[in-house]
Length: 230
Image (cartoon, rainbow, N blue to C red; front, top):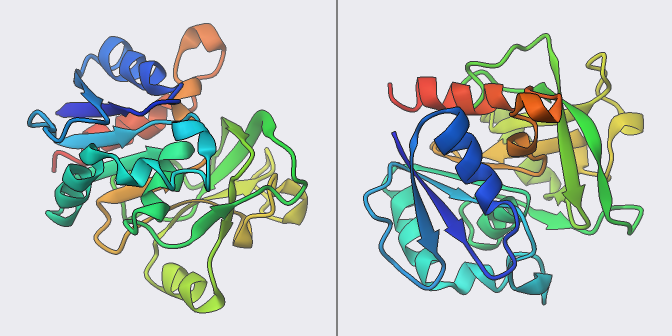
């Protein structure tokens, strides 16, 4: 599988993604520049974390206007794979490829720490390879990570099995105490109805290397590799 990692002005997790995919998982990776429109024949587009355009207006609001996003939207609408992590998730909601919005954390502070995630769906390429019994330790680093959507949208996401992950305790308990940013229903990641566009606020690429003493995030990418090719 050939991956493409987009770099916007202010991206700071693009090289982390390239390293995990290229060095750890031995995959082909193309670096994609925000001013270009050529996706260079990639199968899977990744929008990394960071602070695209300084998070002016709203996080992701300017990045969605970058030339490459027209190609990314076309790629997604053709049923091909796109994933946004943290700022990338924000860009996907701003672009209309995913429902909802990412608002300021309920404590109005930037949060950088490890959290735990429980898999909420087993019907997507990113979750099929994950255990429903395990709570995965994955770091977050965001000031605007509070997932919000109206009641009708939340019901539709639940009914369509589009919720990928929920914040939990280390033991897998899902409750307000283990919700780091106030996200509705502890939602940490969702997908589109077509199950080819994924968004999540936590950073699995920051938990995929033995040198970081945490390889929980590696399982997310391994699941993608196994099930996106089927």
